[in-house]
Amino acid sequence: MFSIHDEEAIKKFFSWQKIPLFRYAQIENALYKNFVFDFEAMQTIPKTLREQLIENFFFFSLTCYEKISSENGQTTKILFKTSDGFFVESVIMRHLTGRNTLCISCQAGCAMGCSFCATGKLGLQRNLTFYEIVEQVMFAAKLLNEEGVILRNVVYMGMGEPFLNYENVKKSIQIICEQKKLNLANRRVTVSSCGIIPWIQAFMNDFSQTSLAISLHAPNDEVRNMMMSVNKKYPLADLMQTLLEYEKKTNKRIFYEYIMIQWVNDSLALATELAQLLEWRLAHVNFIPYNSWEGRGGTYKAPSRIIIENFQRTLEKYGIPSTIRATMGDDIDAACWQLARKKGEEEKE
Image (cartoon, rainbow, N blue to C red; front, side):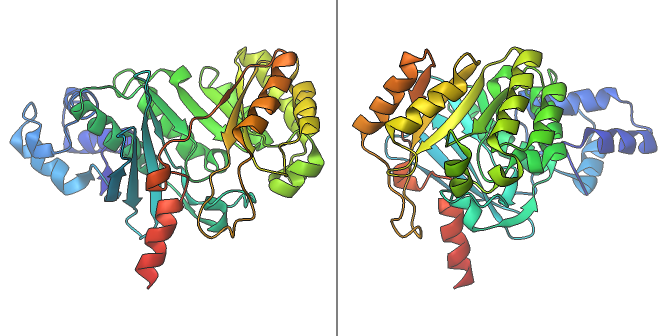
């Protein structure tokens, strides 16, 4: 069987069965515009075709294993189980401004092994297919649609490194941004990477309007090597040169993620280094207070709000805009892989 999101497979099937292609447009409209996830409910197509579709195509390969929301209703975490038994997560964030953002996963687990990241402790289990990525978006879009609101923003900041699953990520972006499908604006889609240089170069050519976020977390090689093993393969100087090329080609601001960890990367000396590294660049820094998770042993902790604000003020002196990310969903383990790890351990017991 094939995914309903596999347009090429559907059109080949239609050609083989001598079904007119306008029928695909009807399916496309029902699926992506009206969120109809049941072939029997697609009354604009003949019954015989509906039966053929049921036999040959599916809407979801992922199963919604658990869905929980925070007490204030702002955050909903969706835990999916793949057909081969892995757990992946998506998180819906309903901001007070009325903006709705979905954070999605592109891999089950992650191979990068960053010292501060829960997902990295799992290791890479496998890449997600393009349709497994799209299914996360469709599930959340329908959920928000039932609430009377529209999904506006999608960020590839969940489990996994997007640029190590580039072709599937690429195809999923094309699907969710296509006008006849979900029609998300490219600029409202953000792909977050820890800095895989060859794929940043591919990304700037393929998606000049899609936003790029870089997990930076340190302004020099010494600290970044300690936190992120990827820096040993793609050192900071090489990464920043590639990002300068990205800026020149796209004229787009890059979002730099900087997780704040007490006594690791939160000193004012490092703040000055970061400011000098990003000065005169198209940059916006997103400070993320470290979110403690079970199993880390308490080694890492978030610094106080005052320290983060002092760090931020240093950047302001250099004219670099920044924000401090508001923590959301702490009561439902909304940080990457927290819930998936718990469920995986429960199933092994």
